[in-house]
Structure formats: C-alpha cells, structure tokens
Image (cartoon, rainbow over all chains, first blue to last red; front, side, top):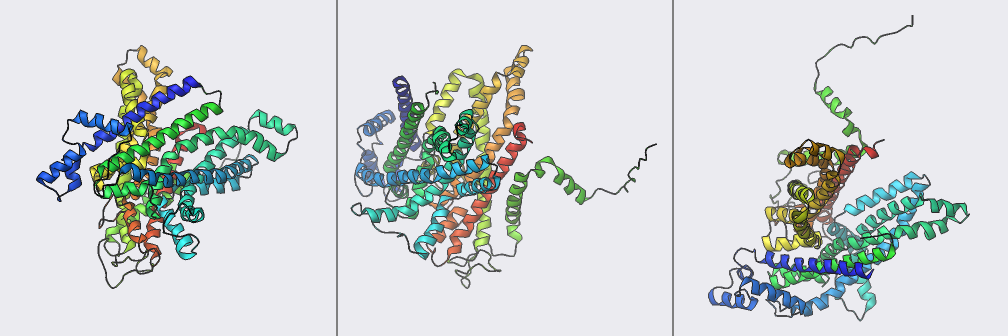
Length: 315
Length: 297
C-alpha cells in the first residue's frame, strides 16, 4: 500500500508540474503579451513598461518560469492588478464557499442516488422493467439538462414564485441557517445531474452483484431481501460508485462556476469570471492551476480509497 | 399434387419517392427504437433550423419596439425579448451555431484523436510516453474550466470557442483510440498480416484503423452533445459567442435579467438545448447497440 501510494504520489507531482507548465506557456501565447492585453488601450509607453516589470515580463522566459514555480511553491501569489488585493487572501475567502457547495452536493447526491439506484436495480432484477425504465430514462434526461438552465428554472420556481430560498444576499458564516438557505438551491441544482449519473452507476453495479452466487447463497439462507440487498449487494457495489464520485469531481467544479455566477455567490468561480473580465491574467492563471490541483488531489485520494477498499486491485 | 397458389405477379410500376422512403424505413438502423426516437427529436429541429430564413418569422436581429416582452403566441411561438426580438428566430439561429460547434468539435477531436492515439498505441515506447504524458496533464483540468481558461487567452467568438472545446476533448479521444489500438495490436489477424510482410503503414490503415472507427463515432456523437452544452455554458458566462450574435447560451443569459417578467426568454431556448443533447445521446446509444454484436438480439 505504501509503495502504491508513493508511486501514485510521484505520478501526481509530475502531473501538477505539467499543469503549471502548461498554464504558464499558454499565457505566453497571448498575442503581444499579457501586459498589453491586460492594459488594452488604457496604457502606453512608460506605464505599460512599468506594468511589464511589475508582472515580471521583462525577465527572460525561463527566469519567469522558475519564478512562477517558486511563487506557487511558496504560496507567494501576488496581488490583483486592478484592486491590489493579495490573491491568496481572495482565494482563502472564496475557497471555503466553493468547497462547501461541492461537498454538500456530493453528500446530498450520494444520499439520494444510492437508494434510488438500488431500487432500480432491484426492480430490474425482479422483472419489473417499467419502474426501472422510468427511473433510468428520467436519469438520462436529468443528466443532460444544462446546469445554467436548471438553475434558472429552479430559481424561477423556488425563489421568485414560491419565495422559499433567497436569490441573493450576503453570505454570513456566523449565521449557518442563512448560509444553508442561500446555498441550498445551488447544491440542489448540481445534485440533480450528479444524482442522475450516480443512480445509473449504482443501478448497474448492484444489478451485476445481484446475479452473483453469494447473493443467491445469502437468499437461500433465508435472509430478508433488505438484508441481502444492503449487507451483500450494496456493499460490493460501493466500489464503482466511490470511484465515479471521485472522477465526477471535475465536472462538479465546472458546475460550481455556473451556479456561483447565477446565484451571485462569492466563490472561486465568480472570482475566475471577474478575473477574466478584468483581464487579470495573474489571478486567472492562479485559479486555473488551483482548480486543476483540487481535481488532481481528489483523483489521487480516489485511487488510494479504491486500492484500500479492493484488495484485488494490483498495479 | 399439392395445391400451390402462386402469388399473382404484381403489376410493375415505376419506383417513386414512396418506395425510396419505404426502403429507407426498412433499413435495420431505422428500425432501431433508440435511433428512431433520436431522429424523431433531431430531424424536426434540423429542418426548422434549415428553413429558418424562409419561415414567416422576424429575423434574429430584427427589433420591434411595438412587440416587446410578448408572451408566447401564434405570432411569436417563443415570445419576444426586451427589444422585441423574436425568441424562436433567435433560438433557431443559436441552434445553427450549436450544430456548427458540435460538428466541428467532434470532427477535430475525432481526427486528431485517431491520428495521435493510433501512433501512440501502435508504436509504443517514446512516442506513447510523450503523448500520454501530455494527455494526462490535459485530463487534470476539469473540461469546462480548461475551456474557460483557453477562451480567456484566445478570446471570444466562434473559432476560439471551437478550438478551446476541441483541445479539451482531444485527450479523451486519444485515450480511447490508444486503448483500442493496443487491444487490436495483439490480435491474430494482425499477426497474420505481419507474417506476409505487410508494411506498418498498411497494418495501421487497413487493419487497425477501420476496426476502431465504430466506437470512435459513438464517442464522437457524445462529444458533439457535450460540446454543445459547453458552448452554451461559455456563452452563458459571457465568454463564448458574444451578443448581438445569438447563441443558445447567450439568449438564456439575456433572459436571466427578466426572469420574473419574461420567463420564456431563458427557459424555452434551454429546452431546445436539452432536446438536442437527448437526441444525440439516443443516437449514439442506438448506433452503439446496432454496431455491437453482443447487444443485438
């Protein structure tokens, strides 16, 4: 296990280095350079030169590259260009919000999708195809709904028409109830597609296990259906579901950008869009690297969990 | 002698359009329920989009100050927006963009994935390692975020959007193609071809690539659906196709401000995106089942 973890960790570090390199060189592909793209027509001559120096663009490319690596390693992320706020501070304020949405979505969708998927598998196993078909068909359509559209429809119904959830307002951590109400709709929106996907995976996994010999043995011992289902079937089906939860985290991060934008939640996604709109490439490159880092670390954890849960996995 | 009645000779007649369509209708593919459902969804959308310029509706950019924020009606089936523009007409123009994006991304990703994946899988060694290292780096980015990052560098508009989404998609295709090539490479018919001294280029183009096309096409139609969703998301965030040029994403964005007064602006174009995505998924499901002998009944 330790050997496996070390190997995966080494792989992860190479990927992270690659991610940083890719982001760095992609930004240098901007026609002109980042400073003139950022300034647009507002700066010229000496002022533009000062901005270049401030961004370190006057140094040789490789000095810039290693400087960038060093800055990330030491968390020296610099300031935003327009408002001169330390980027690290912005990220520290925004990240808990985005992670709360992402983790809330995972918890909610696992709680809903596992019973749902198991039910569908059980019905399919018992030959009640219509319920299984209805569930899988609905899941497919829900999975394909564009999240910005689902968000607007739910906003229309639950905030504007029924007034159950606030559509805007401050996020104040000292008032957890208010935060929960404010984040409820975004989490529900993201959970819909997550549930649709996880329920389908659970269904397939449970259906496969239900045909195994040990399930038949358990039945022949006279155990109740529920006990067979939960003690034997679901336990063995948990592995593929856990893997997909990890793998889908990337999509989930993309989804948080959209719901944060719609519900005006000051998380990483809104920070990213603000950065792009103000052409603050320093901020944008840091955030893109951060998103990739979160995703890579989650994948690393998923690999380890997978290995820990299934002793058959060999690499 | 057994009484055999022969069917009377049918009167020969010229084969007309009716027979042509009947023959198409009898094709194995079109009798597949999922493909039928997919065509039932996609064909009307395609026909409407193609006919949009000659339909008796306002032009997508035409404003009409006497018909602002109109509820859907016979005259404006999807209603109108703040400037009295016809939402149906704008939606159809947006579908056109979506289809261009979906098709281009699928083609670019499919082609480059096939070339790079085949080379990596067939030659192995250094080429394989180099290609797969880059692939792994690209796959470390969530795809919407990679597209957002690339668009922020390349700028907005149709071409940057297509390139950004394609770049985010290519690694997946390389991976799929490589794994197919790896499993084909050790098959007996490849060994057979090798024993008669077939050159490597012949092995690749005549034996390996043709056997990988079907799964790649299935992946291609899913990629097209995803590309349409990502383009819509980018345009919704204001990073894709920019107004006044309509795209499904930016129409929904325009409507967001007037959600309470004019629900139709945002919701109806969204339904169209959903329909296209569902249609493409049924199509790929159907094609996969049709081509996969194991799932044939």
